[in-house]
Image 1 (cartoon, rainbow, N blue to C red):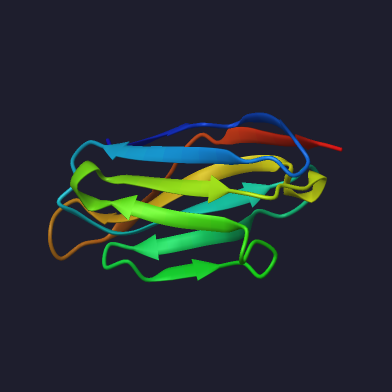
Image 2 (image 1 turned 45 degrees about the horizontal axis):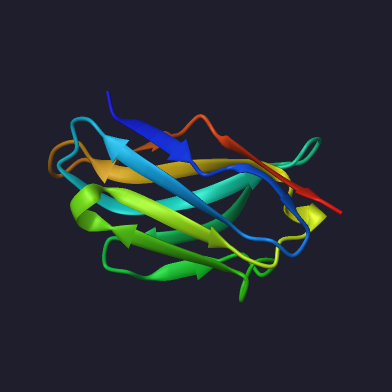
Length: 120
């Protein structure tokens, strides 16, 4: 029932920037955390960044200092600012949310993904 809708992906040159957004909607009592993951062709899906509703963040070493994650609790929306992009950042980026449909239960949901392509 809960859906995540991603936006902001696209094609950008190396050194450029993008801003991804992911909005959660549906039967949500509360959101515990949201995050971004990515999967390049032939590779395993990997964590990019996560953020809790309290604002605690976690980043993959490969994106520290370049990407910034933020959350708008009122809108159940997470953003990812991607700066200084390189071709190695090319991947499908997936949004994830850990949420409570009703207390005290928690579950998770994935978005469909948005393509980020960085040209050299």
